[in-house]
Amino acid sequence: VGYQLKGDSYRDLGRPADALAAYQSGVDNTPGSLALVLNYYTLLQAEQGPGKALTFLEDIVRRQAETVSFTLLRVLAAGYTEAGEPVKSIALHETLLKSRPNDPILLNNLALAYFENGDDRARDVAQKAYDLAPDNYAVMDTLGWILVNAGDASVGVTLLRNALARSANVPDIRYHYAVALNRNGQTKTAARELQSLLSDGQPFTEREAARALYEQLRGSGSN
Image (cartoon, rainbow, N blue to C red):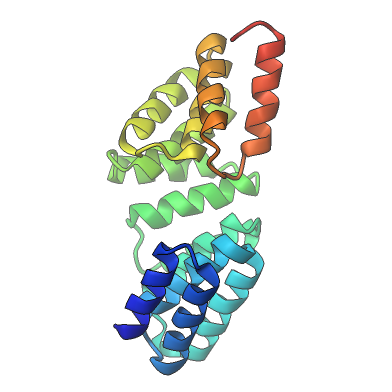
């Protein structure tokens, strides 16, 4: 608890290096603390990118071997997708689903990995996740984004609008929604959404793509 509180305090004070050191000490001195491992991993990912964070998590999984928690494996599987390693993500998600075939978060994350890998199963798996958890904004976002990219923007934009209403301003979902609006013929609304998103200054994965689309729409007179 002491390591956790110390790390959290440093993190909240905007001192990530000190927070990482506190979490690392906790991980080293209290093996098996899932909260410390996840806090260290999340902050390391934010500060130093997915590579080092995944290496850390993989090492923890190897060290814990047979006692590793399901939650930790699920985080690792999702981390592979975020790091652009969908093949590893798919393999681990499919293994985890053998024991929990109706876990909507696992299904959602597997659908994302399939989508990133160009696998046609993405849509059906995303739909199954949505059927199991229709009010989960991450699940809505995944299915909506897959549908938009499959050419079904009219349904996708509705799902993404609902996801955005539940997600408290998650920038990646705002970007997906703007793309959906544009592909659904609502270019002026899409441009306004992108302008607002970019002006917020929040970092997100598709920021450059969002800027490029906004410049394209602005150039065509859609703002």
